[in-house]
Image 1 (spheres, helix red, strand yellow):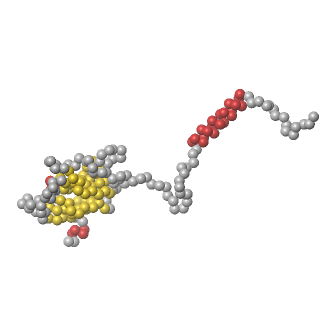
Image 2 (cartoon, rainbow, N blue to C red; image 1 turned 90 degrees about the horizontal axis):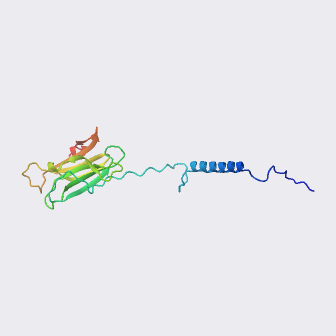
Length: 192
């Protein structure tokens, strides 16, 4: 009889304890692999000059449907102009809306309002009134730039001036400082 080159195995059948040990080892590998995952795949290969993607910027509040503090009687409230920017430096944009009554004739007074919208809320809210419609001013030029609101305001020298024809022109600038919007006259307006 020829002897086998391979030594005889100590056993030829597995015992129940060996099956339990094998099952435990496999369960441990599966559990460990679910905890240790590779980074998500990306189209670009990481390398010099690549940065992780930034979170999407927050959307500016939409003035549609906002309850503005303006009384228009039977006329509709009209958002005549709007612009957005981060006015208070918190990283979330605010919207500034120029609002007036849709009167049809004459020069109805405008209100200028700052809107903000907290994350997770459905509707923006008015947080500041820069121009009150009771002041009988209209807004001609209007912009939001570099954390400031600028506007050219048209007004009246007396109650006798007809509302069709404002006779005063003023420039204004508002900036958020120490928890409030402070109004000033822009430097370019002072030189005129």
